[in-house]
Length: 157
Image (cartoon, rainbow, N blue to C red; front, side):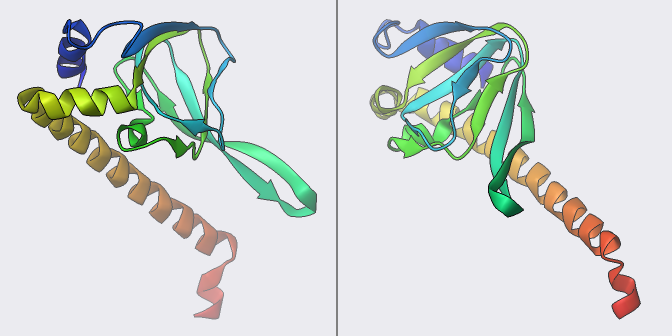
């Protein structure tokens, strides 16, 4: 994804400060908040971020469970390519760094107008999403196995 996205960001038909902007962030800064509406895709240049979901416990207690860590070269917020969406998780910096915030609507228009770049972009995005799905499936299986062990389900079989 790095190469095609860098090519797009360098194209004069996709201008900085209109279609995208570079942002510097500090450790512990919230980049996106779960529940807010967003229309941007993010590309991490430097630093690390943590994706976390809000989990409600009994007694109206909440915790922020870490789901994923993101590093330089990673993207997030890709659902914004289709339309502005409510963010399904929060993303917080766990170090200082920088990222590129890309206007999802403008990127979609650009990709439609530049089919070769669009094909390469979506091909890379598809590979990223398949990798995420594969890792998520493993996590679900691990959590399911842990739950069965924690409840000593073998005694009941």
